[in-house]
Image (cartoon, rainbow, N blue to C red; front, side, top):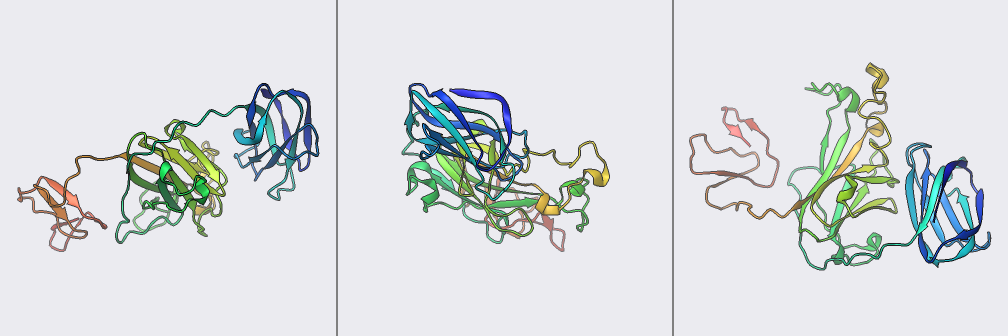
Length: 348
């Protein structure tokens, strides 16, 4: 059953709503509430028959970016409910907001779709860390095949693999050799990403954890959305970490805490000019994006000692232009800088 209307605004701590003779139908075990809030939100206690009964579900409403940016929040009922009952929704300040918690536009009860069978075969390959290269200062990644997790509760599993957290950052305004026009608007913004190889139809889950860093937003993640959403099976937020489940190779971006979804980018005011359109606060108010590159297995990789392969050491020279013995350059693990040495010879 779906209940929808103009919405109820600025719900306060300990306020509540009662619905008499609410018909749950034949079998309901799921509730979804569309809510919006520019603050930390709160909790919705779902009770039936008596206001003082134990809640049959707790719906955790978190930041959506504004009072009008509505998102669905879903919770599973403690046990299935059917037929007619009195329904109570009670709104609780669980985050110390001490003010209006959120707006509620609609809610719906329904039945969960039986989960599909999880594949028990398939491969996952995680690349080793890059020697001499620093990992992201903002996020870490963990990944594992769903059937290989050593605990059915993802938050309690501890046999994760650790893909390298690559990091790239926009040059900040005033930095040496800065020639980028948009550094005035997005200087210091960053991208953290990981890559690995996986078989098709082999569900894997990627865990994203935010690190504490004084230069950027820190602490538990409170909002996450995958783009494009249809390329992932689910994007869940558990205890401040994000868990993205995927069954097929894909490239996706995870928007953290609405850094991209809930504001205009890259200018603070698209119709403004100069300082009027520049984000203030530097990295702390910037966007620190996260991407996952789940690649299919590459079947024709060259071998380092294969015919026609020239193995380039980090910092080492490339083959001479006159060298016709190679057809493939194999860059060995490490940092390769495209430059020339003192004699003008290319170094990679």
